[in-house]
Image (cartoon, rainbow, N blue to C red):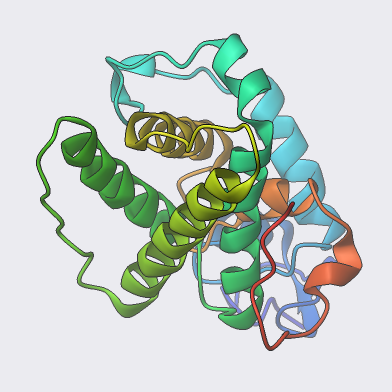
Length: 212
């Protein structure tokens, strides 16, 4: 009996995505490429941990490489970052085809929008691909809702567009360092989900909840 993918090697690993046993080589080479791996696959989890420990990041290729977001900003804007991350996770829950690459395109497009807003101009270019465009719109709505909610709280000044820009830039940079670059990678999405209770994303909800 040969591996159902390569038809050459002996199958040794059970693949939950295909519900059959495949060879170790195909598991390694086709993982998150042609195989849409579930997040709880033990081979996927182990490979991500292995890759993350050994990954060398080329910071010149990270989105907005000329922008460094200080730790003080992250500490002071934790709720904003969580609100944006939550919006990503909710959209991903309701649109299972979404992958890391889609998230990064949406984040980079949104960062560019807020970069122009913070300079006093307005220029918006929505992504062409549906999932990327819808996520972009959901993230923008989450950011604007957060801004309105903060403005309504007594004694607080509304968050500035430049602060939203920096929060989105940080999430884009974080995503670039967390994804593995494979076509079906959801390593970044799975990382974002760890910031929240897993049962929140078990089934679709009727409304997007913005964290307080």
